[in-house]
Image 1 (tube, one colour):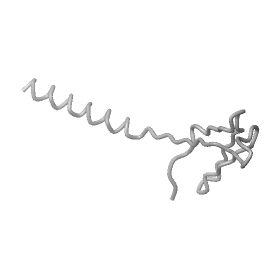
Image 2 (image 1 turned 90 degrees about the horizontal axis):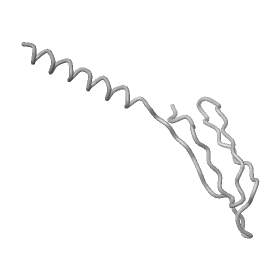
Image 3 (image 1 turned 90 degrees about the vertical axis):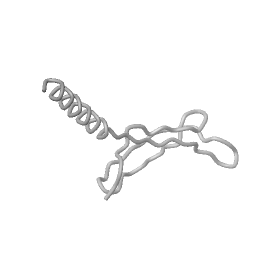
Length: 76
């Protein structure tokens, strides 16, 4: 009887931990800003999450690369 209760408790804990971990989501965007002459340093990159209106921004580095971490995921 005690083994059955322990097994049931372990199973419930395992299922709960899986459900909790499944809720963690993250997103990001990165890229390269360039022209015919090569990479563009200092370009402002703006991305908007349309459903919520959240705006994300970054400035390209000396190689023309930008990174937008921690963006919202999904849409309607």
